[in-house]
Amino acid sequence: MYFNKQTIVFLDGEFLKATSAKTGLYNQTMHYGNGVFEGIRSYETPDGTRIFKAKEHFDRLHASAEKMHIKLSYSSEELEKATYQLLEKNGLTDAYIRPLVYLGENMSLTATDVVHVTILVWKWGALLGDNMLNVMLSSYERPNPKSCHMDAKVVGHYTNSILASTEAKQNGFDEALLTDMNGFIAEGPGANFFMEKEGKFITPPLGNILSGITRATVFELAKELGFEVEERFFKPEEIYTADAAFFCGTAVEISGIKKFNDYSFPMNWDDSNSQLIQRAYKRRVACNEHENLYI
Image (cartoon, rainbow, N blue to C red):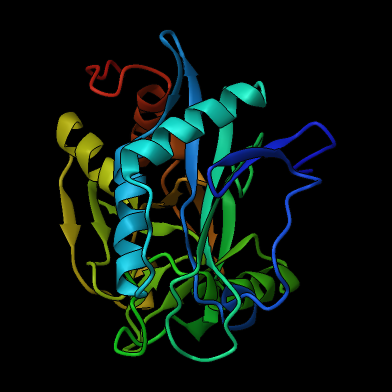
């Protein structure tokens, strides 16, 4: 699904066959989850292949590494250049891109100076598919931000996401929605959450959630289209008064939500401002990043 015998990966400054790339069994990331990564997409545009918001993603990778005491020796510009080369070597235009910074052999619970960088690319559709989603309130919470850096994209954090997403699917839902430690809505396992109410968008504030690149893009698009966005805390019960809702993230892109628990959002998706954001996002990633929107 992700690679074959011809697939090329970037590893520590070299371009190698995926089948011959190796790592040590004693690396700290594998044992303790101390590593950072990004999820990025490239798109085919009239001007050729373009990595969407490459600088923002690689800058966030650096910020995550710094928070986890990881010394990342490649600049954002060097990582972007290597990624374009990797896409070309694999013959990919519309692709998912996974930079991963993982650590060397270290069985202690301290930082290590041995740092590895790999970049993987593959063809991947929207993570949650193209259909409207049925979402359940998870029994799991997002970790207390005083226990770890929730604004960093850390390998180990995603055990929480796996538990929540697996629980949802085992209960017949497409995905989960998690609260924070205080019972306020936080985010999905791998996506930020927006609800639409009387034409306005409401989304949880930063602090207990990942500062999503796609989330920031939704703010940009909403401003361009003249829609108001409000950041505030709200409990799950308020979602039952919303007209529409969606998840957003690099992997899921913009995915509309049909139901939350047993509540069906009353607004027809095609009549919602949420759907206009979805259309605007599709246009934005497939054209010049600063092109005006014509919906």
